[in-house]
Amino acid sequence: MHQRRVREIAQDSAGIGLRNEHIPRLLQQPKRQDIDFLELAPDNWMNIGGAKKEYLADIRKKYPLICHSLSLSIGDVCPLNETYINDIRRFLDEYRIDIYSDHLCFSRDPQGYFYDLLPIPTFADALPYLTQRIDRVQNLLGRQLVLENISSYHRYTGEIPEAEFWGELLQRSGCGMLLDINNVYVNAFNHNFDALDYIRSIPGNSIVYYHIAGHLEDEEFRLDTHGMPVLEDVMKLAKQTFYLHGARPLLLERDNNVPPLDDLCEELAGIRASIA
Image 1 (cartoon, rainbow, N blue to C red):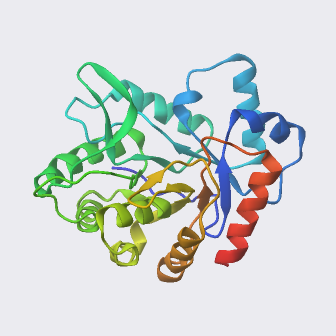
Image 2: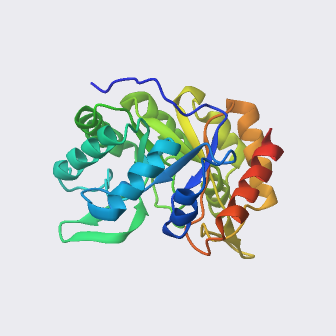
């Protein structure tokens, strides 16, 4: 069974993703007071050596790390990639990382990976299958698995509401939730449900940390992009989320159109001040 660990990242902390373009500044500067932690994709850092490994070791001396991976594919119909999961565990142990997250999605079929994260249909009869797979992953990791709600753009006949599906999954599996506030907002608009009702229905003790990000708005849909500043309506939803569930570590995502480090940290500070 997975272990519960004392975590070094405070509940009211805020961080950003570790991006290659920011590494030189992070290495040159003393620990920044406006960054409490960094989130990285272990897929890009595992089984490395040389200078890149030294960079990560130096960064870890300054900042706590969270791992947010891309390749677990918990919702596919293939056998779990236990070699990958064991590599993840060794990486987490080496860098003393307590929080490990991935996405509630599938990203491969028997022919290989898609290079995309596809939402799984929220059919009630998928819950026992997912619960079994989550339990196996948690046992291999020796840690709680944390899963993120992702954006989606299609619904199938027979799906139960997304929030109801999440509530059942969290209760049955004991996994944690990475609550992406922006993705709730995007899905609420695209699928015509109330975002705040969704967030209110999530059991607060299952929420491990939050994501917040920007998205693209069209008259007919919202597109999750992680490529622009957080919009005011998402900020409002974030404030309501903190009011309902309390503080959790908050990660500002920016995966493209990445601004200079100082600019990104300034946006993070503004978000933190607004929510506080």
